[in-house]
Length: 218
Image (tube, one colour):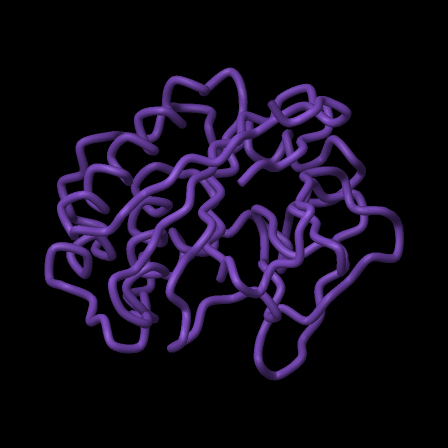
């Protein structure tokens, strides 16, 4: 798989595919993953100072305002964990949330089969909005850097579209780590840790090619 990525001054995106041995609804979240959802978990990486502000600055580049109910998903997770209300959703979401909680990076995990290629990452045009939960609540993503498929924007560092979220029948996922400069080294650390855990769980990881918009696929 390849994803075209528009030029962006600070975005440092990482992406990979994960294949599940069974439908997601048949896979329990093991204790080693559930532990990641605790604030007191001794993670092998730490958030560097200034990361949270750098993420917000990255999301502002297109005019989006990452605050209030539109704050980065990583900030929402931190607040939820502080309040002792971190839910368990499913194996792949729990793992992504755990990595996000301790690394500080927003992470999207979407059902690969619910995407409609070709895929690209770019700033969402004015007026773009979509439901982000089962009750139909919408987010206006105008000016926000987003993953797009043929149906429009569908995932980002704030709230992913309900139409691409994982469910019981999911058997393969696309993961996006919404990192930024000057903390590229920390994004790489988070990805290595993420992939290490996936390997421990026996899940197969496949590479995604990120290419600049306009480049041909080799």
